[in-house]
Length: 164
Image (cartoon, rainbow, N blue to C red; front, side):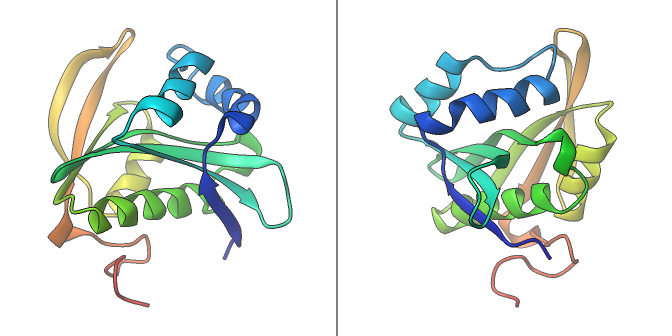
């Protein structure tokens, strides 16, 4: 299993975050200003970065808005050289734990219809498709997926909160 440090995203991380962002979401990448506003001005936002212990290289990041009893995953990406090794699972688990500890009963996200790898990750945690957003991305539809607190499952198939 990967041993990663998960820390809150800061302005000092943005160069590395933007590199991953632009290599993950070529046609719909966020700007530096968007990330900066999220981490400095959005009181509902929780953004994290992941890196190997004792390293300064960021290998992934994620963000979520937690508003009252619902949450919305805004972004999650892993450096192209570190995909399919468990980093996304660790980031997603951290975001879900934060949301549920803050009282969210439901968590939503949008994912490109064509993004099979991301969909598989979300399905491992028991996210279900609840809607289709036509033309959500300028070039593609998005699936809206939802996870209810009582249905949370870790990537290993057990409850992600409480079971060890």
